[in-house]
Length: 313
Image (cartoon, rainbow, N blue to C red; front, side, top):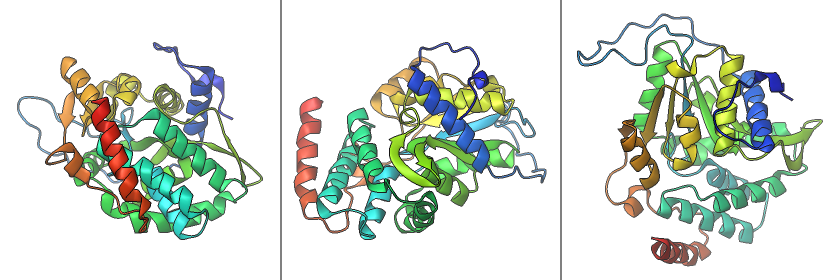
């Protein structure tokens, strides 16, 4: 368990469970981090109107990227669920549940805390009793099957710019830390902060350490990691699509709204944050409807999601 002494004074309230989740994520991220490259990159020409960013050689700066709909189209936990179903970890009705949640996420275009919590509860019950090493091995296969072709090239280029500048780049996500770590490694990033599921002797217990790494817990994780890594948050950058991540974005000196939902877009514009949108067309058409391993029940779930979304607008 990470030490409470990692935390610096907080400007925003956070529950004890958020702090615990953040500290656990920071400790797990540091243990699994890849070594920083030693090759000195050539400096890219900067525009005359502003200094180059990221700043090459600034090792007290780092970048923090949200995962779902920022780095990757859709939600990692849902893609992971599809892969587990294919391997018969659970039954057809649980897949229908995953399909419904994924349809909602894609059609609404935002993270709904209730839906995300429901998905994580489902995942915890599914992995209970399985070995961590087993899920890590399967996760590598699932990345190739469902995630590799869903990476946003524009966001990937932003992350690479920080790496080329000699800075560390971390994913920060509510997805399981094991899944997030696999994605980070495949993309050549430093590591990942994610939700930490409790394990005893390498076996999942079905419980979390603290709470899901969502909202304020993400900010706590970034703060704890920055302290442990001797980073200057004013020189760091953070990227996200969701207004739920405003606490994390507000921590750093260089916040970016990527594929932002309407609330984040409004907030970002009011504070003159930088925006990047790699989507095209209308929101419902930007990412399309997922094909959930041939489950016919998805059609009804999708229709219900559309109707619910329209009523909420």
